Image 1 (cartoon, rainbow, N blue to C red):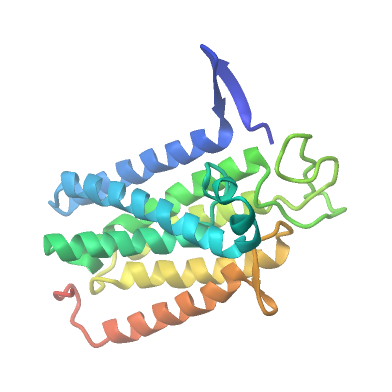
Image 2: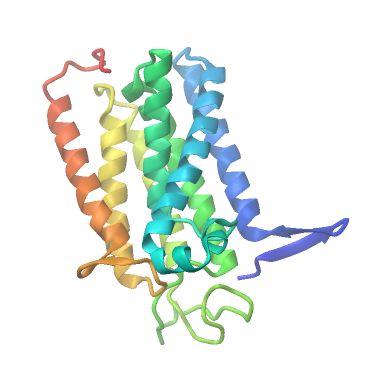
Length: 253
């Protein structure tokens, strides 16, 4: 609710940027620990996270641009500047970047995807708290006790009680991280955690979209994110079905 947290030597620290940065740190720390537990390279974790950040940035901007075509055509720099992101674009772009890196380095993509995704969920949790501080990704007006009034200067409408969908999403991502960590304690073929992440995230994102009230683009009766969620959920189910045919901890590409 207060995006400008404090100023040091003329530099203002913004809540959204700070929480995104903390999310990256959390993802790295958790993934490094998981790599050590598996006797895997922490340097590879660092390279994959940096790759995911770069490709995720590109994917997020591409999807944001596609959902704001009129603004892009009218003023490209306003759309391609520092503001304007789509989480789904960042997620899919990040996964593609990791897959491409693994292909080039001859690494097992499903193994590394399983290792990284609990950290991704943790980063998303902190990132959504950043959304709450900035007032973006806000919910529908409400008269319930859950309503939060954002101040002037936020991305959310000021002075109107709104559902704090950012905090709902943060709680959901935290729960997702814990579920993935618990599921990973059991024996599964490589790729199961990736598939489980995609399924649970898709279902949660589809549901939370009904409560949001910011403009996110649409495809027919669905928001852009709901439309994508249908396909990512279907892809996760297909991946789970394929993994059933593979032996536990078997080699997977």
